Image 1 (cartoon, one colour):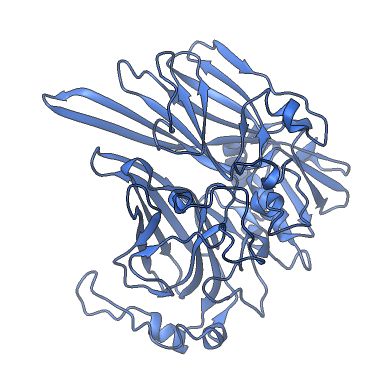
Image 2: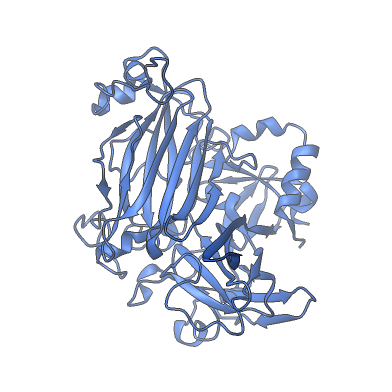
Length: 501
């Protein structure tokens, strides 16, 4: 079994794999950031921050997209609406707090057509507080509105708008020659689900997006690009349109012609080699492209001289479909190990090993226990750090850093702490070895034989802040930065495939 840098593998694969353009026919994570589906790994309104979001339609046709905000504990939906982007359109919005002890809300001054939100639009607790039972029973997580204050976002293209259709006419911005003044009509058929669906064709690629966690009062700005999934859906006779508020389409909806009723995934593994895996469930194909057996990034925690602090965001975008037994009672839990309802305070825990290295290679290892399956939560999770939520934040602490009540950079309440070696360096998170081994099974090689992917489906970034107290007399200067995680992938197969050799 070999493990290779994901970044290197993608670059090598693009350069050396014949027929790369064919990736549009299978689920894949586009390194260029344009796709049918976008994942924004984190939003928050904690610590006086707002989260700014944008989505861009690069295509020559309009798009009907599902915008879904998910809270960070168990990925229960807190806001869902339909957005209509005309050709070359941009939609922008901000997530802000309703009050210091309240929930989050969405505000926008954008003119693109939506169905149906108010402005501002408060995030809602109904999907987790039992209001929507029995379809979505209450879970073991917190039931109050503050649960909406941090999470992540997914945007799914439901269909391309047929050029010249009624929907195309009312959602296209009418230009008057003045920048930022063009507005669409947004009348019927927007709001009429039957008529809207009739004006849509098969969704194609063309979206990219970005997010930024900003604190105006202190001058911090943590910006990132959304992950882009290509080849998500290619049914030539259908689209994925659903009314606003529907749980569909979701990441379970992946479907392409290569696997009837399921989906094919393309991944780059060893030395840029392409692994083609077929899955009976579209969900597993999406998980496959996010799988990593290890995540790497850096840290800087010299809080005495630089006020430096470091947070890692680790989001599992498909975890809910495996562990939320309230909504998906018959779901297979693997590659995760514990249903969300196993703890009283709302967690589905996975163990990990952490190794931190300073700049001179001194390291500190937190060993992961080899827990039998099924996992005993008393004897296993007490021995090692664990990640318990859909969205997780790791705060790295320096030798003089006091134990915080929230994550040190982003103010997350869904956080764990790591005692770093030295003041700056890098760390490795082993996402494979814990709990007896995290494995996504169910894949079939194109040439026959089963394939297992090691680790967990994860995305996220490293956020760093440094404070310069000497920029100018009386001026407190903050310097913020964000770096996407690096990752390794590995697999095992009982068929002949060089990517898993």
